[in-house]
Length: 278
Image 1: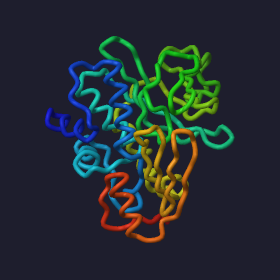
Image 2 (image 1 turned 60 degrees about the horizontal axis):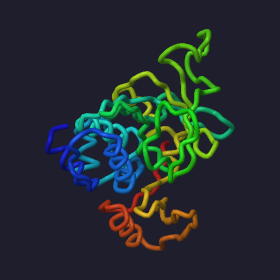
Image 3 (image 1 turned 135 degrees about the vertical axis):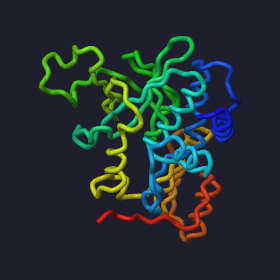
């Protein structure tokens, strides 16, 4: 990512170029990303190709003012952080489903970030409803955040390499559970990955009838007051910071396109509709 691209990205976030890659800078970038760049899967249902390459992600998220899902959002955010001097490692995770089942390998992408002060953080701007600020990676107690009570713990359900003895004792291979309000959200591997490692999983997420991304539409972002606004098809939900919700159905295509434009900054020529894979 060259300096002009970094500056354009920071303008989208409404953040000036920082002098140093500090904890405070990371926290500000994380929050502003959640407030300005939507978590959305519109490309799947608009027939747009999703390519996990930095230039293509810059064209979409910075150039076209769009959002994306985890591979896109965290993939590009990690590149921005690295360009600003942070030490960034891409990590793979598997999302917990109903009954404690785990999703596919490379189900989710998250970031381990080291700041200039030497502290290490879990950054994730691509999980939808999650922590507003990065989580302390090495902390094993509860971490209070406007998005809930979070905890990072050694996983009681190691998802990989089950045939190896003393799985939890193998340095660098210990899986971690990320919990929100006591409920496991995803299981995180600690070994480093590169963006290309997630290509096959991204293809599955965008093409499989079993993927929840192909089954419904979502466009969602954090609001400036700590609430959330979500458009799913024609259903608009505005959640206040205190948890109260206003839910309504949009009657016309014009209303839907206006919400995408005015509330998410996304200009569309047509209203997306669910395209279920054959």
